[in-house]
Image (cartoon, rainbow, N blue to C red; front, side, top):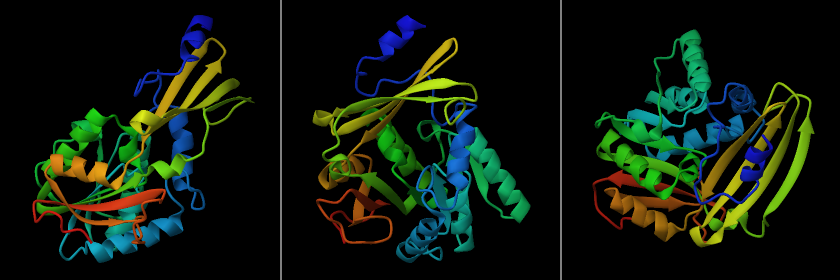
Amino acid sequence: MLKELQAMMRKPALYEKGTAELWTDEHISKGMLEAHLHPDWDAATRKHTTVKEQVKWISTVAPAETYRNLLDLGCGPGIYTEEFYKTGYQVSGMDISERSINHAKKSAAEKKLPISYYHQNFLTMDFTEPFDLVTLIYFDFCVNSAEDRAKTLKNIHAALKPGGLLIIELIMPQHFAGQKESRKWEYSESGFYSATPYLCLESFYRYDEQSTILDQYIIVTEGDVRSINVWHHTFTRDEFTLDLRAAGFNVKAIYGNMMGTDYCEDGKEMCFIAQKGGSSNDVI
């Protein structure tokens, strides 16, 4: 185990995978679900008051009367999808976490909501033009490598009808401005990363030439050591515009967030509305 730990102590190569996954681990997914469902946490899901504001804004820029069939990628336990349904959309949700999808299905069944859910990965989704609108909320897109981001955009493009819209949130470089590389150890008798006593080495790494950062968690338990690598690529407006065009999208509008504030070059986040087909350079 010491050799495994020693190997994990080095700075990982760009987009190197850990030995465990944050979203699919049997124990950690319980804590992730709790974070999703807490109405006042900006954790796995935004505060639920913010969710309502974002859904309301989306319904004004892409109304259900025009963009009826909606797919929410990275839907978690269905916080957004249920709000979208209340707003008039015909809703589907997809997430990599089986625990979250199972909760979403159970909640929809209890409330008699006709929402479709898919336990699937962005990279393997294979819909063919059933949707008018795809949403990708809270920076889920940013965790992927360049290759996987291109594949995701290609899959979204295939899932949209001609003229359909993608609405997506992204992190900008200013989000991590001034944050230095760091490491810290924490001990817990039982907690988010394990039901048994564990040490967690939390590291923050910068890859400035690639506009990417890494949150790494090395969890040491009795007889086991695991690493979780959570990557975050940061985008400029021009970079993501080029990525969209390469995937067959045209940019319709760029905002400062997913509630319609004005775009700012020095902002920490941005929201793109892109269309499958349509005219190019029609940017609001």
